[in-house]
Image 1 (cartoon, rainbow over the protein chains, first blue to last red):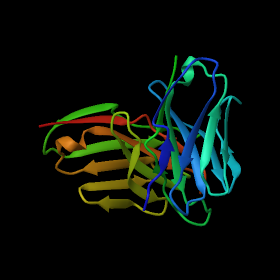
Image 2 (image 1 turned 90 degrees about the vertical axis):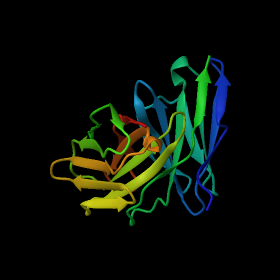
Image 3 (image 1 turned 135 degrees about the horizontal axis):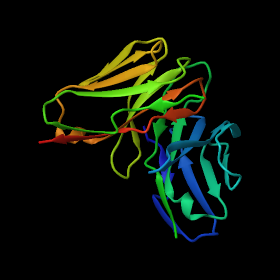
Length: 115
Length: 112
């Protein structure tokens, strides 16, 4: 069973540019969550998508957005990049239903460096 | 607001010693608690999931306990090995489909 796939693994962007990251969840999973990890703030929740709808959102500025497609693959976009956006971006896959008690499976992450 | 704390932030032990990692959370109304391992520059690997109705979970050399009333979970790793060196993170969910709130992690070094 394939795991969670994140692409690309590494990105270097310039301040002011925008970037799109991709996440393919485990087959059959309908929920994809995104997290930002930095040395100073640790792991922080960005947003969660379930069946193409944003179900939960963290406290990040509107420059951070996402979407989910009908095949459950998700993308997150960061516009007008700032140096502080440099981080490891992780996505997590889960079945997503509210009736079951499940854990989350994480991908290997995308390392974004803003210069 | 749920807050999760892991103390100590770093731990160094000789090979063969048992590891005890602590996690505390402020709101006892959790849905489940999950322990993860993270190697430098890598993603998170799930180790154990404890549902709110459970007291403990075991997998091989790993055992995790949960005491909701006191807001604590402990991860025990028996007979540590150098390959256990990593950062260990605990995370709680307060509802199904809800976000995970992470602790800051404990960085473990097992010396040969």
